[in-house]
Image (tube, rainbow, N blue to C red):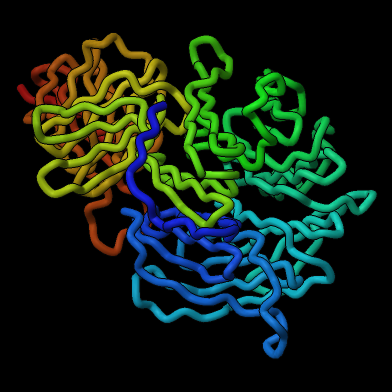
Length: 484
């Protein structure tokens, strides 16, 4: 992973003005930053400041002596939850466009200070926050009521909180070193919580990606599996220049994690071929002081770094990038995620293997249709509609691709034709034919207006004199027509 400094989004002050939290909206269009001055600064996707607003105390008539402990955007990017040390979580409705009116749509008063906050991307109406009294709660936006997910048996202060990559679970780190895990109700199994492990020191730095990364004052970075077993650890306690680790954050693919310390931060990447973590880099920055906050842009192309003195720096992140036929630029932000940019107008699309497989080859046909290969899957997409698909595939490498139908990609290999509908992660249907030509194939998908049921059909040649019509939804042959 290469990290290149792009710009200083927020200049540091002469004294201590800690950046307490940074968060990106899931659509990558906004970044929110707050320091100890309790003012939220809003930046666009390029790191240019566009707006700001002051937060409010829990008691409107009270003094502003609180600290913002955490912020998180909602999964739809329209709301911003702010947790404060004066025992309250505010949820602001920001809208989706610059200039939209801001308003407070939810308030969750508590009996102790909010210490951290996260908003799992699968929980659209539930924001999760930790308390100084050791409880982890959820704020339910629809009812405007909080509920306790679980409570530490000894009321140990919640020091850190993070969501799982799939958005269906959370981890909480506590002052006594314990780390707890909570699974949300997924419709099959009910909610559950359990103690994952006990870390040797306070887990101030806690993040969940390909593995679980934990670090703290002992100058060690430890990787755990999902059940709390130690996978690897990196010991920097023998280096006098290294101080305690303060924060950690995985990139969106979960394959790279950054861990912050004093005047530096470490980069660790997962080696898929060796199935192990490796130190991939070290950024030394004089006068940075302690790293207090990290936030990755959801497309993985930017890393925001906040410091003790109030500065926020943006870094460009990529493994490699190259030009394709002088018309497109491929930026590999991880092994399984690539940003495809059209150079003519700057439009971009994020190509990602949802199974975490390494993307090994990318081609673009007719300047519109994208095909990428991984060891186990095929990824296909339409750059105009921005619809992407990933399907299991054990191909020969001799596949032929046809894009004459705007709704489906036709893949022909060894006498078998496979149809993939853009935006669906499964093969729509297959059939065998030795007469492969876009002029001899007819595919129709839900073309009748006001149609309720799925109507997906293909007509193709079995031989030079026989046409078969196949229902792609049921796999039933609807008609076989012979021509003499």
